[in-house]
Picture 1 (tube, helix red, strand yellow):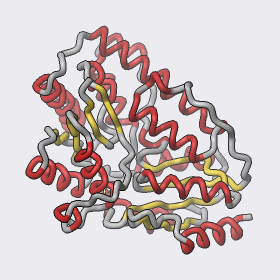
Picture 2: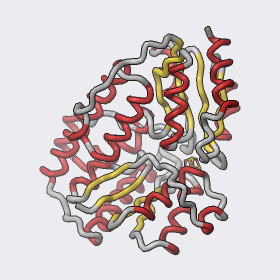
Picture 3: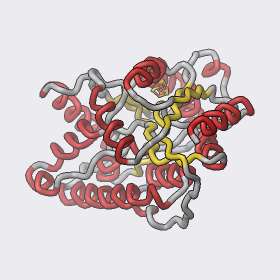
Amino acid sequence: MKKVIYTCPYVSAEWIAAYGLKPCRIVPYSNGTNSGIIRTEGLCPYVRDFINNLNEKEECIAVFTTLCDQMRRGFDIVTSRLDTPAFLMNIPSTWQTIASQKLYLDELKRLGNFLVQSGGKTPSDETLAEGMLKYNKARKSILEMNDKLSALQYAQLLEQFGKNGPDEVGRMGFSPCCSSIPLAIVGSPLLKHDFEILEITELLGGRIVLNATENGERGLCSPFNKRKLKENLLMELADTYFNSIHDASRRPNSELYKWLKINLVEREVKGIIFHRNIWCDIWHAELQRLKDWIDLPVLDIESTGDNQSTNQNTINRIRAFLEMLS
Ligand code: SF4
């Protein structure tokens, strides 16, 4: 089955699967094969590694979104320099108007047309509904696993779900973390090697109770409303994805802060690790705002994308942060 590879949380896996293609939301990893072209483009490491990972896959389709300028640039590079068929989905930054919601719905339909041109089949309502319920159930089980797993295991579970779909959820055996200082990690999406930040934090005595990075819990949409599913499937899919995933790129992005507040309070978080990828203007701009808004200590960690996230300096800073909190 042809894979449709993407990273953005606003791309619906159910929608792709309904066309008979395999949705594959990846966590990019560095494979040490940066081409000179990509190196000189000044891309953030997340987009750079995403493109490098596409380059390794055969017979895949790539979906980019307009969530940030770097992703748009990534799309231009792929369409002009690689053979991989690629689609750029427009995600409106504004979200409070009917026009924005309609644009998102139209973009889902446009994505559907692209999937048909790429070998997919237009789905029946039954196929789409079945897929939506399956993904719903899997997301629910994942959320219930948060306090039963270490932060690293939870991130791996989310990665497996994105990459392999709902059938993999529940097949993984895990053990919980027993560290004590509850923390949240907030910010840019983590690259695969940045998962080490989670592991090291918990080895040093922190307990990450909220992964609010893009490829953490924040990137999961809310459950679908079963009554609305019966009335208008596609509308419910679009509404849920567009309105329940909260990102710094939204204008205004006040919903992100509301979502954070609820979860930080509920989970009794004592400190925040703010993760941002180098060249990521969107999250860099949020750092000061978050510090001004929240009455919690914030540790800023910049990932350079060269496997240095867990260098001694970072480890020492996490250790000092935890000592201050204990
Ligand atoms: S890390 Fe920032 S700049 Fe890079 S793709 Fe994500 S949002 Fe865009």
